[in-house]
Length: 192
Image (cartoon, rainbow, N blue to C red; front, side):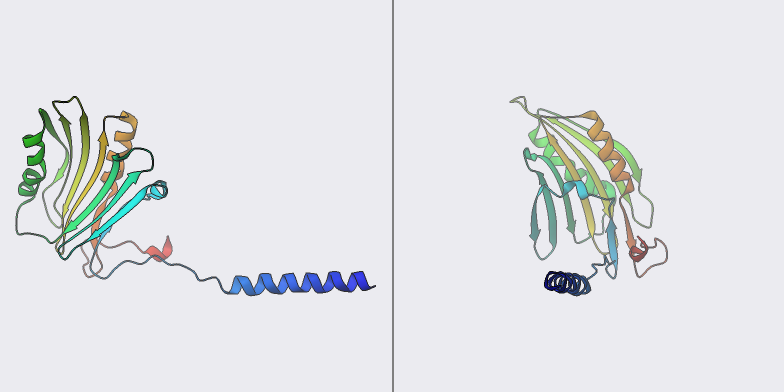
């Protein structure tokens, strides 16, 4: 009889701990910020990558670096204040260091949407240096009303064409929305 009572108390105690523990779980909800939002596809595969964050007055960046290859395999999102310039101007500014520093430099447009509401462009640059090293960078720029967005995927000295194609597909899924506007509606994150 005593063992049965101890088992019942233990069972009740464990049940109580389990039930009380579960009631303290706080549900985490993703939210859309008021104003302009950069919407990117699922990037959970970056969970093991090293993240560095830079926040300055007029510039913010997030850099994910591969845990083994570091910056030779990186994903970068930069956000700056917009300037009253056309998207071709920004493309030239972004490509200029490649023209200046590379022995061979090519730039190839993959997708261009210069029209409103948010002009955008996806392109790929290839840089071969005199020392034999090579880099490929996939770029996406979006010109928003609140900010200018530059997204990059960087590969140095190791290129897998299948991975490049996957990233091109991901870049084509990135877009801007504005919670204040009705032109490009932000997703309902609570229904996800």
